[in-house]
Length: 333
Image (cartoon, rainbow, N blue to C red; front, side, top):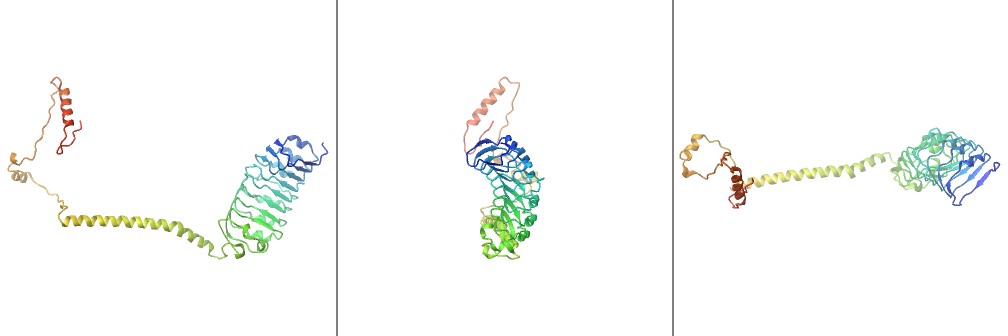
């Protein structure tokens, strides 16, 4: 088996993990294990298969990260790891695979920024990184992938403008940047002249030629976008605040007018605080005559020396609590 050069096991519903023993097949040039139910991680020793040209592991359940050893396969032409559960971010120390022609990492859980190092894949004709969680901007260096004819970066979280450097990709026939958060002007030269609206749909604020069915190119487009934001969000908020303030002042004025009306017809007496001297009070009450007395009260003196004083006091309080009369307030004790 050590002389085996091609391994075709695609579409057989194989389960379990890829055994490390596969690395003993040192002459392998092609591995086709796509469309199975393989799980676990890609063996790190795969990077030792120096003759490997095609590694197709798509549509499985492989997880963990892409082993860094894969970027040592100098003879690799086709790498397809799409539709798995591969995560984390791409290895920042990714090496240049100068012969790599096609790389498909779509439909995984890969995150982070798209690495500038990919530009070192000088023979790359097809690159698919769609349906992942890549964020940040599209690298300007992608304009140096002059052999690229297919680029799919759709369904990610990419933001910023589309690099004008992509206009240098004269061989580009397919481009998909839809379902991102891209903004700004769509380049108009060379490959972009033959593209349709499907390449740019569902982005944040792209604008370009009428043939792309996006808003037309104007230098004031971004300013209009900000103006729209102000009109739709900020202005209604300010209007609500003004309305509330106006209603408050109207209510205050209305209350003030009602008070003035009541005062004018004598229903609301004007309260004036006046000071009285002792002499004035004495004179007004005929020297505090009992005939002018409005009411009397009592003061309970509790003699603690008398036996049962507290018990008698509690009994009196109970009686007073039970008394009900419209001229009496409720006794709380």
